[in-house]
Image 1 (cartoon, helix red, strand yellow):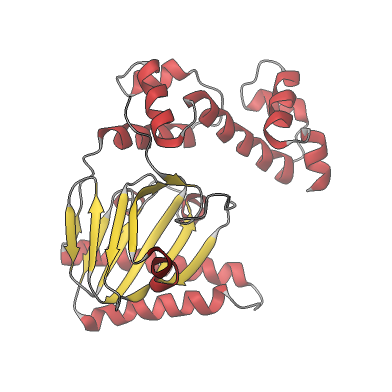
Image 2 (cartoon, helix red, strand yellow):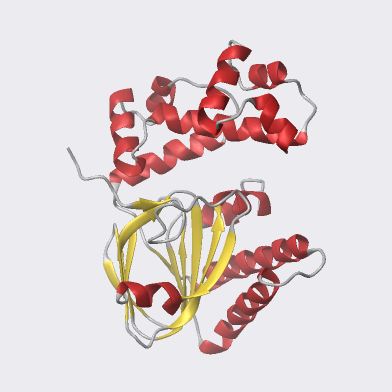
Length: 288
């Protein structure tokens, strides 16, 4: 059996941290890497996008495809479920912006060329003069993120959209490098997760597997290797997250929510919800 991949729900080294759907964080590269002696071992983040704004220093990226010494200044974009490790020189300078996949999806709710562009690992290099615009956006995001100003979320969303649009234009106009992920397991897993995210009702695991041209047993093996969870549990977690949104933001009854998510029996939905959240759907709605 293949060794399970190292993954984090939160940031590297945070074993017990569970970021919420609105998670946005920005820190200096040295803040975390110094504590790990400047070596970040290969790992994946299940639901996080990371954008590295690297100003100077030596950085070596270890991905599924290759080991690559990056030319600085550069921007490194790492989407969820992408294997990556990093080796830094002690004089490295830069920032890491981390956002949840839900934040990214809400910024760009429709499948545009930009969204597709950031589904794969990217390294963007350009002249220092062009790099200043990116640094400015990072500084503005940092200032807004750690402030208590009015309409903070609106401003952050605006700045994040600007950042991704600007990076997308750089990729289009400067022909920056696309790093192909050759890890077959992760490629299957990413396609499975994309299908799960675009499904708002129950589907059988064999139907997901058929879509990938693999067996249900193989799909389960992949999910256990990447996430340490069965394919069914991953689908159930997604459906329960959908249910939470309905409970918080609509007036649908619990039975109506269950049927909308294609649960045959509302009682089964309620039991599963309580098992996964510790409270019943009714109690969850009351608290929120």
